[in-house]
Image (cartoon, rainbow, N blue to C red; front, side, top):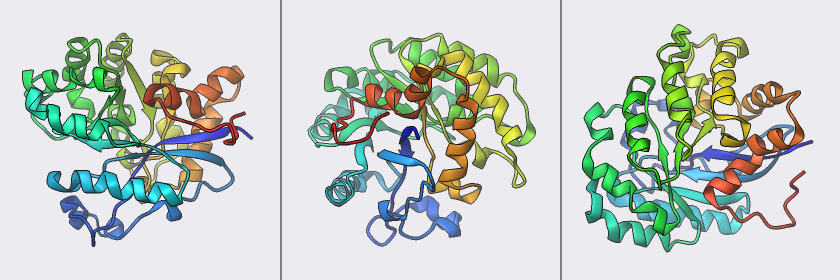
Amino acid sequence: MISLLDSHVHFWDPNARRHDWLSEVPPLNRRFGPEDVDPGHHDLTGIVFVQADCRDEEALDEVRWVQALASEHRLIKGIVAYAPVHRGVDAADQLQALAAEELVVGVRRLLQGRPAQEIVDPGLIEGVGLLPVLGLTFDVCVTHDQLPQVVELVRRSPATSFVLDHLGKPPVASRALEPWRANIAAIAEQPNVVCKLSGLTTEASEGWSAADVRPYLEHVLEAFGPRRCMLGSDWPVASLRTTVEQWFDIVLELLDGLPDEDREAVAIGTAVSTYGLSMPATDPVH
């Protein structure tokens, strides 16, 4: 059995921090913690927590809460924290404070739903340009219609390491492939970007099947190559459509027939190298 690292997991506690978006999704409007993660039959050896969009002023508290959880749940290997990178150099102090936190390996500011111009705004480009010297990555969470601006963002920030969340949220429900496919190819041409194989089922219709998501996964694997792709569940958001076990089954089946080194890269290696994770020798990495 191959060891897996889940590169995209959220936890939250609505009683401790305010997540305004949860009021619109009643099934998710409760506490979710590491004790609730169920990988089924899979050998899960690590988790990267990704900020869950609490209010900005609560973001550092969110980081410290997750670090406290990590002292009890050793699966938590890293944190992608919220950071106001759109403020450019004015965010420098906050970025340095985050980088000083033990488990923070990257940052994110949600860009989905924002005007296209914000993605190529000089302030944001200046802000993400501060990350390499701090050893931090930037997770890009956008929808497929925003991908042309993402191409420009990564081209203008060649020293920054970007992680594209959820394959750029393609229109799975409508089964459309273009222009998403061409935009993904353009992003993959930039060597400073890797892609998370995550989040597709919530872009699909309720009666989705593996056949609906497979063309998108196949294209990303071809465009980026397995060694620039990483496995992620997007749990618990994905629980609206699937389970962690089912999603891992789908991705791993797609990897059947690839060389062991490529399968291991998607399963664990790309996330470890991109985020600079510390995986103790006692963790089984096959």
